[in-house]
Each structure stands twice: as C-alpha cells, then as structure tokens.
Length: 251
View 1 (cartoon, rainbow, N blue to C red):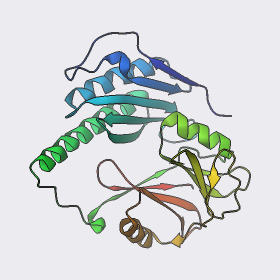
View 2: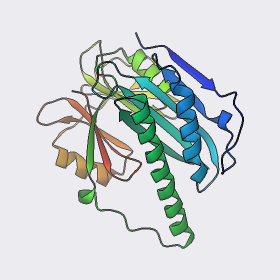
View 3: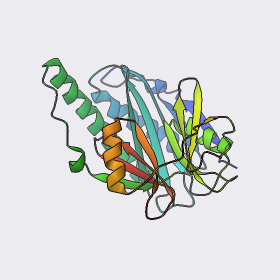
View 4: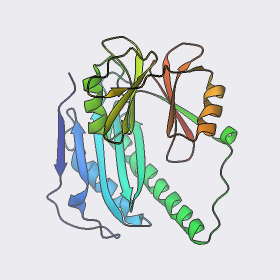
C-alpha cells in the first residue's frame, strides 16, 4: 500500500525577486516528514527567483524511502513559460536533499537562460556528442513489486513522465508513461496486464548499454525502455535536465 500523500499550498504570503508568490508553489509530502514541506517550498521559491522567463507553475514532491540508502527523494516540475523542467534528487536527510534540489534547480535555470540567449542570437550551442555524455545510474523509486494501479498513482503523485517498476502480478519489469489521453504500459513481454493503462504490443529489445545509447540517440525519443543484455532486467535510458543521460534500473 503506498504511503499517505499530502498536497498543500502555502498560506504564507510574499513573492521572490521574479514576482513568484510563495503560496503558488504546490508541495506534496509522502510519508512522515514533519516540516519538510514548508522548508522545501521556501528553498524552491528562492531558487526560482533567478528564472530567466516567467514561471507558470511549480510543484515538487518529497518522499521518504525507507528501503533505500538515500532515504529522501524530491521530484520537482517547473513550467518555464511552456518549457518543462524536471529535477529529481536523492539525499540521506531532508536537509541534504533540499540543498541538492535547490542547487540543481538553480543550475537548470541558468542553463535555460543561456540557451535562450543563444537562441535569441540565432547561435544555438553545438550539441554534445552522445558518446561524450555521462550516464548517471540510479534505481527506480519502487524497489518492491507493485500493481500497475499503484505504479500509476506513484507516477501521478510524483509528477513523472515515466515510471519504471516491477509488476507484482507478473514479476516482470515494466515502464508506465504518459501519452495523449492517458497512460501506456510497456513490459519486457507484452503479455502484461495494463490495468488503468493501454498496453504496448512490442516487447522490450535486449541491448547492451552501448547499443541502447546508440538507439536512443538515433530515435530521438524521450526515453528508451530495454532489457539489459547481461541481466535481462528492465532498464530505462533518458536525457536528464543537465544534458547527461540517466539510466534507471529495476534491480
């Protein structure tokens, strides 16, 4: 059963240097984390002061992970005048996770400002070759098997675009992701039951990491779900907010 989720907007007034009201930032707290929500809201509010364009919406979820070495995860989504930024961080404590999030948001906003300035000058930055990008590994949020319906609740609560998990019904690794009009489910084997999602009829390709990296870049997709050639477990390659590649693993 998923942890209780509390979503709040602050009653405290005040705006930052970019005119963003503190109370407009939506914060969700998953698990017992007293005081964490308002602390996170204020630090995210401070970070957004340097946004290079209007912030239309900002939300973040802070969650306790009792079954992981990094005990706290924060996921933030920022609508930067139509450009969506996603920032995910982990920390051993609430304080370290919030500090890390604030730093990552500031860096992401600084990059967004530089990219905008380059576009305005009609001189887009030269893209980094795929082989030069670092791959940052981290494990999925759901370490224990869960039902598809629970995975859907986690995806919605955390504001993810995709969510790698192990299906409790079949024992196979799957990815749940957003599509126009709802959710879609892809499994290592398409025989998985979708529950609240439609099911992709295509099995996940079995690839080495180098093969997955090459296919990901060639297809220009937001993520690539595949079975790791060495283990057969599900993995998901995606592009991070900092330009590097993220590798989410199920085991």
